[in-house]
Length: 238
Image 1 (cartoon, rainbow, N blue to C red):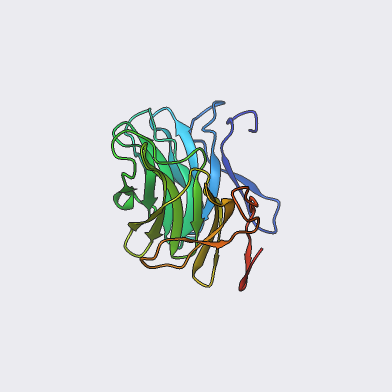
Image 2 (cartoon, one colour):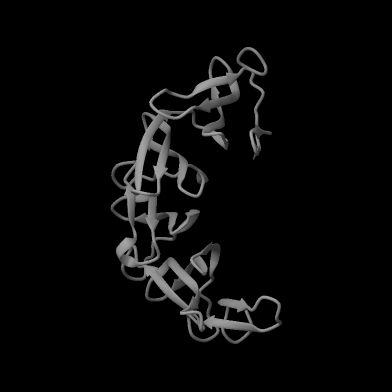
């Protein structure tokens, strides 16, 4: 906020002190409140709010390598209401984000940076209910992602596998409400979840049709070791 344009998107040239206002999305001292930036295709995707669109997904960056620009990626909810997008992953040319619509609630969407390539991946929680848990739980690579999502009130959370190449989402397994702390190693997905017999312990999904299995019961019985902050390095998960 420079005191004239409100809080807007700026760019600074690498190795130089020059700072540029990319675009005053809301002209004058009011702000478009850009936030949630993710690097994407020579620039960045972010959430910004205007009187015309409400909070929607925007892109800022170089245009033809000569100048900076900002453009609306997609007006998911036409008009001033907005979909309040939250970016959760970028996989090459594909970006995943959560967005809220009156018809489908808060669901997973994908985009390749244009209105024509922006669409809901799947209405996981059918109808106007929200599939996103209290906070998004997404682990992405450069070509796929694992997502914990609320499927319905009766089943609770499920684990899903997303493939960027065909924009598909496949059900993997029912998991517990507090499933989180995911990491990938050699094609195996490790994650923490709580079950009545083991408490909160480390589980593994090996891919394919086989369901996840308990990897190790660190504290035998139902107390659980509460594994957290998983981190993969080469062939080791810490």
